[in-house]
Image (cartoon, rainbow, N blue to C red):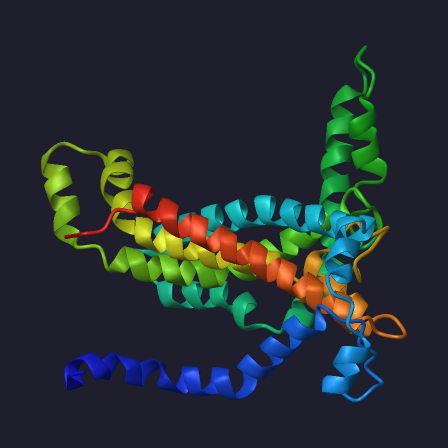
Length: 320
């Protein structure tokens, strides 16, 4: 191998060394444990693995586990709502910040602050924001409901039940099984916009301005330039952002741990949180079943990534 061909490998060598030194072993051990009923209080050796060997029992248990099924659908619900919202809003923000105006760097920094803030701090902040009694979200919703209710006063029309509910009560958010997941999604989208925006902004600034000049000479307005120039040239960045957002969405854990603890009534229990419960939240810990859930999640994400990569050839435009 020539020195030119070896050079790129030097950049990933530290990551490879770290992976094989700290990650490869635990990954293989978790695969082995997924076929056992190993007790964490027993020594982890070959004899313990043989004594606790369960074959495919953990995987058969998953097929009949109603909590796991609920956690899977909760995860899917979260991903299908949070990821499109995060991608769309961050793209709109990046388009707005991809220009020069006084204070643009300060505004960009402000959008990035939630991204670099601890997930615990974000979760605690949004627990207060979504408090059904004193949180600013419900205070604003009640104010809107009261103004709408006032419009019906003095008329022959009765106040709709939904308007009265909004004016007097509003969503229960994290204490209501129907509103808990939307509350988590609001917090996650708010915290994730900055990072996605930064990637989109880098992609936008990498587009050659001559494309826009040529489109303008052809009579294309801003909307047509966006569809015919910006979006095609930005499609590799959109693909990357979507791929990362999907993988991150299926691995959501921190906000749920801080904000709801998987409740109420398992309404926000997702795959990674259920895995955590099985491994560390019960006594004795069911490490074998938790490992099986981890490998189920890995297999699902692997298939999803492969499918996305194949679809990439159809809708991602790359410059020659």
